[in-house]
Image: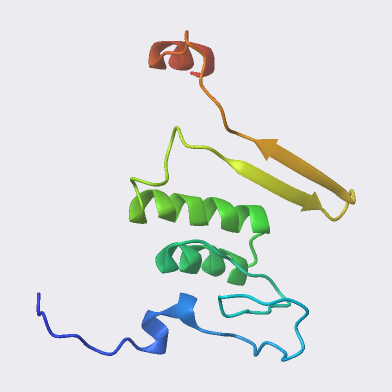
Length: 123
């Protein structure tokens, strides 16, 4: 692998693109560059995982589909920070029901939980 640096093209860094310009009259300040979107967005710490989620949205998938794809990609790109046994927090708005669903997937696992029991109970 060459130690020379090379310029990253726009196609190679899709998560760093700004798709729309932020208006100058935003009602808040931020240390980060604001990005506005009207048809969906994906945000996480890893650009490749962002691209995985965006590709699902572009293909017509739902926000839940995109979140699952993003989480799966994070398992590969950040295995020490993301994975089975981690916490999961989710807010989901169902537009048809006009209802917000919340999932708190944090906390400790039961003391009696073993892989054998999981396989016996879940197949």
